[in-house]
Image (cartoon, rainbow, N blue to C red; front, side):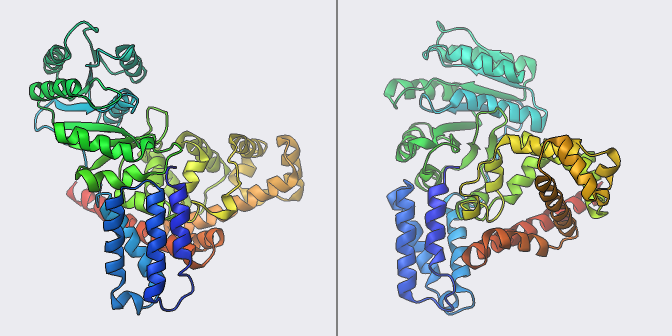
Length: 480
C-alpha cells in the first residue's frame, strides 16, 4: 500500500500524545510539526500541507479539545476528518447520460495505465450493472496500442471498434459512436492517445474528440508513483479539457501516496477510482473516508466487507449469517471462507484493511505465504466429515491422526483449532451487534494507547455504517 511510510510517521506523531490527560499548546505545536514533515515526505503538495496543518491546528486549539476528556483521541478524530475533507469528503459516482450510451473519454500520459484502466472499468460496468459497453481504439500512434486494447477486451469479452492506425482518431470516434447507437450499447469507453508529456498537438486532438463526442465523463488516468508530477499532469489536462474525474493507478506500488492527498485539493476534481493491482478486477471506487482510515492505520473494514461480498451470492451470505448466529459455523464453512479469502488477493493487503493491523509491530516481519493457506486446508481435509461438522469431537488422539494425515506438527493443528474457536466466538458476537469481542481482539493485536484509540474510532465508524446499511435494507423490504 502506498501509504505505509506516511501511516508510520503519523502514528508516531500521535503516539507522543498518548497518556497525557491534558495537551499543552507546545505539545500540539510539536505534533503539528511532525504531521507537516510526514506529509511533505509523502510528496504531498506544499500548499495542501500548509492548509491542512492550519485547519487541524485551528480546530485542535479549541478549549473543548485541549481541556476536554481524551484530547489525544479528539485530535486523531480531527486529523481523520481533515484528511477525508482534503481528499473530497465522499465517493463520487460516474456521470451518466439520461439516455444510452453514456460516453466516457479516457485521457492521460503514456504509461499511466490508461488502456488497462479502460478495460477494468468496462469489466466493472459489465459485472455490477449488467451493462453492454463498447470500447473505441482511438490511440493510433503508440506502437501496438490497438493490439493491447483488443487483447484486454478479449479477456473480458467486450467488443472493440477499431479502424487501424491509418485513420484520423476523430473519424474513428465518429464511426465508433455510430456503431454504439446502432447496437444500443449502454456505455462507450474511448481510449485516446497519450504522450510522454503534455503537448499542444495532443491537446488539440483530444479537444476535437471532446467536441465531437460530448462525453459525459472525461476520466484522467494518473500514475500515483509519479508523485508531485501526477498533480502537475492533472492540472495540465484539467486546464485544457476540464476533466470530470481522476483515476489513480499503481497505488499499490512503492509510492509515497502524495498524489491521492493533493489532486482533489489542487484541481478541485474528484478521484473517482483507484487501481491497486494487476488483475482486471482491481479497480475500486475511491472513498475518501476509508482512505483516511487506512492512512491513519485504522483499517478499512467496509472495503473488506465489500470485497468479500463480491465473491458471495446472496443465498450463500444469508446461509452463512444464519450459521454464525446459530453458532453452528463449522470446518466446512471455514474451508469455504479460506477459498473466498484466496480469491480476494494477497493476504498482506487484506490484513491492512483490519483496524490495528497496518504497521502493527507484531506483523512487521510476518510473511503471508500462500502455502500457509494450503497447510490450513490440508489440516481440514484430513478430518472426517463428522469432525468437520462437529469440532467438539477433536480430542487429542484425533488431533494426532489429523497431524499425521496433513503432514503438519500436532502443535500446528492445536493452534489452528484454537484460532478457529476464537474466530467463531467473535463472529457470533458481531452478528448480534456486540463489538466488544472485536475490540478485545484488536486490543490484543494493537495494544492500548493511541493504536487502540484509532482502532476503536474505526470500529465505531464501522458499527455506525453497518447500522445505516441495516436501516436501508429494511426500508427496501418495506417498499417491496
